[in-house]
Image 1: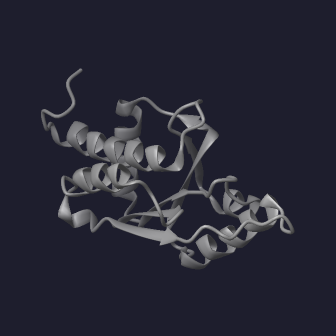
Image 2 (image 1 turned 90 degrees about the vertical axis):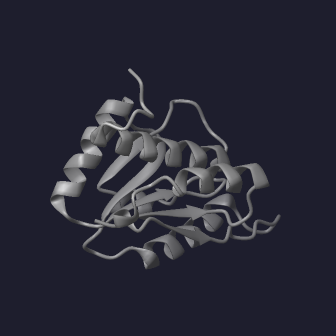
Image 3 (image 1 turned 180 degrees about the horizontal axis):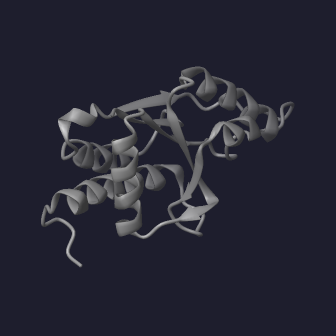
Length: 156
């Protein structure tokens, strides 16, 4: 199983890139984790946020293969404890399909992307800045791996 994150928003503060990279370096190599960035669509007085969201959604969907299991990060999605997420990740590994997570742009994610999702996952009921969501996602991915392998990173 390969894991990747498709994230809308190609410019993040340096602390986001640094923290995200820190967790990526800890992930198991067999996951061949990959980050695919989608540039944020231009917003102007003459175009709506919905138009930008739809354009970003088209770019996201173009990167997703039919065989992939897709998890969209959405504040209205299902919440998991770290242990529950680790269990889900373990199930997904057993399934053998490649796993793709998606974080939308500043105005959210298109309905077409939501419809393509196999699961909507909420990191929190709070609305998070996209950079922080990216870091939190990477940390939880690493924590899930540590839980399933008995690594001491997660202490209950």
